[in-house]
Image (cartoon, rainbow, N blue to C red; front, side, top):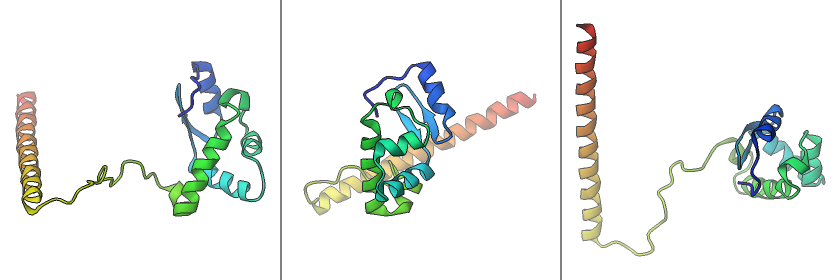
Amino acid sequence: MSKYIYNDFQIKELEKNPIVLSASERSISYSREFKIKAVEEYKQGKTPAQIFIDHGFDLELIGKKQPKRCLQRWRETYHRYGKDGLLVERRGKGSPGRPSSKALSVEDKLKKVEARIKFLEAENDFLKKLEELERQAMKKKRF
């Protein structure tokens, strides 16, 4: 997320670039292919600023430090996960949250599992009620 706040005109200008997937007041989403290409060009010796300029970005618009910050994140991901790391969206998927700093006792594990079961049962009950309400609404529509 950038410290810059883009106005509507700037957002439209950014979205004209085919590399930009979307832009908002505070962020720009770049295509996955561009991220890979940018990392590879960086490995060949191009500067982050030059990479962005070559691909049609105005550094005055996005900020002079933005290319360096983006390339730093992308290079780290590329180094850690390879090309696939930049091709697949990893945020929030399968994340169990912050790991517990202490080992749980058997009783605590049991309580946790029982709470999860209660939650899932409540969720199932809710979904059953919702389906019934939808069925009733469909019957009323027909008559």
